[in-house]
Amino acid sequence: MDSKRRVFLKGTLAAGTVGVAVGTGLLTPAIALADRPKTAFETTTIEDAIRAALGAGNPQDSDQITIDTQDVAENGAVVPITVTSSLPGVTHIAILTGANPFPLVASYTLGENTKAFVATRIKMGETSDIIAVVKANGRLYSARQKVRVTLGGCGA
Image 1 (cartoon, one colour):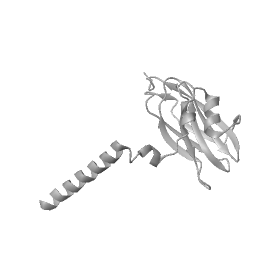
Image 2 (cartoon, rainbow, N blue to C red):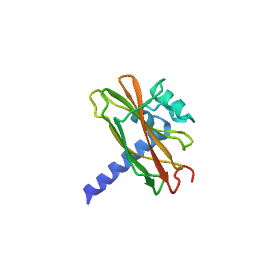
Image 3 (spheres, helix red, strand yellow):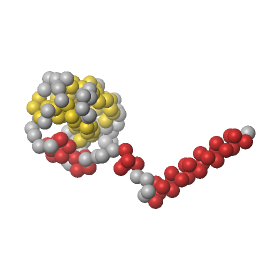
Image 4 (cartoon, rainbow, N blue to C red):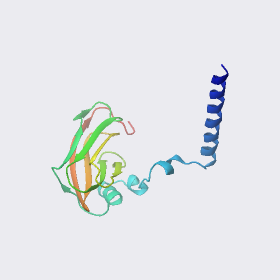
């Protein structure tokens, strides 16, 4: 019984300490966990989002990018998506959707010799194309797939 009390007290003290650190601003999880291109996620057009996230350039269509997702999403709040590419030298993958108020929904920076594969769940406000933009060897490539949403997830 005494060991359970000690574990409980240690856990309570640790949680309280973390809570105070977060509350006072000493610990900020967003800064510690990811470097987010804030301006890219706040743009309202697809072209501006691509430019802010991946640099200037007009992506060309590529059949070496595969988007795996549902054709019909019953709930736009949770749309699973997988993007893979067989292009050599992939350094970035971005996922966008045109019908959302802010089209950039995910941006990934990949390390050297990393397999070009990402899987996530995105939010879609309404039926639109999902666009995957891949940066490989300094050039931009893209692929798109239309997803029909029957129940909106962004603001619906």
